[in-house]
Amino acid sequence: MNEFELLLQKAGLTVSEAAKLLGYSEGHVYRWKRGEETARKAVLDVLRMSANETRQPEGKAAFTFIDLFAGIGGLRKAMESIGGRCVFTSEWDRFAQQTYDANYKDNRKIAGDIRDVDAEKIEEHNVLVAGFPCQPFSIAGVSKKNALGRAHGFDDETQGTLFFDVLRILKHHKPEAFLLENVKNLRSHDKGKTFEVIMRKLRDELGYYVPDPMVIDAGHFVPQHRERIVIVGFRKKVPFSFGDLALPEYGSKRMRDVLHPENGAEDPEGHFTLGNDAEVNEKYTLSDKLWEYLQNYAAKHKAKGNGFGFGLVDGDSIARTLSARYYKDGSEILVSRGEGKNPRRLTPRECARIMGYPEDFKIPVSDTQAYKQFGNSVAVPVFAEVARIMEPHIRSLISDAEAEESIMEAAVA
Image 1 (cartoon, rainbow, N blue to C red):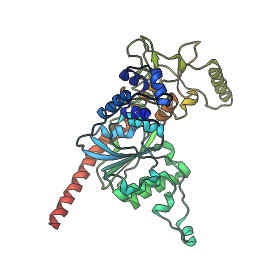
Image 2: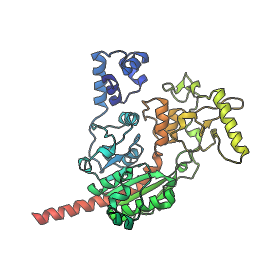
Image 3: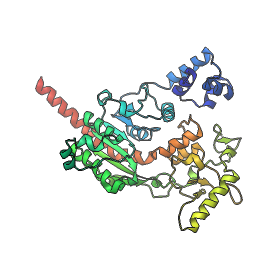
Image 4: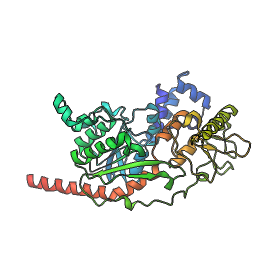
């Protein structure tokens, strides 16, 4: 990454935004970014100033948290919505780092692969949040391992999985609470054995109070059917209940709430929308060849009695789950353009909306990377609501810890 590209990332600017700021064409910016030309010192100085202006230290917060397997920061947004301050971030994908870096005010470098980070080098924190990937766990019997002279228990059953890194950090820092997210099928993975190990590690071996996890469908908050399992835990038993969630009526949001209106009601944005009416760029419309393929594919599976096929939506629809493979053909969510017209993909901005990100969320990466990032993200409003009902219990546990520390200090004195 050259100096211009690095400063562009730190400033959180898209190419079009940088062009306007610097007074140059987008072509110039692209050439500087690719290293085909060298930007003048004055240009670099302007970008450096912009980066410093947008990355001021944050003030005192109600609590601190760390963001593991952070993606583009959906769980971070949830925790910040209740007054939390992020003190450590880990995300291995460099494109996700770019989007994360563009949207959050940090003066800290994003850590890469969490497996390479020692737990003791992570800042002290009150809450751990993680959307950890689900990998197979080894569930070999303890008796067999005893016979072979092999270790078992905390390290052995999860070693080699990314959940192990969540456990080792929880074990070392013992934060007041945690919030974990995964796919709905985590409960049934490996006939339920994976989920059983996760619960046992968190409850029995680490000693956290973990209420029965809940599967929440994002369709209560956004026009998308997206079920995710939510696991929360606390250092002590607290009166937390998922029953306190305030879930809007399912389907109260429809696709019309996220689709570009194409009537001039919003300003055009980059290459997503063009012209005075901000009409969706034709590049998002499916080619005749791809549209024909998807229709034939759906017809073939329908004839066999299968449900495979594309998902066509209009303004009244609730969409299927947006996936990380959306960039390939967009088949799970295709927007109807009317009878006789080929449908189109969602734009990255519409993907941001269907995941509950605010309008000012910056998308500094290519469409392909943006589709992957939003498809891998959490639906922000779901976890903001979970964070809301966690908040009083987090505060209570922090107060208890501070009181205990004061008593111990007084006793020593």
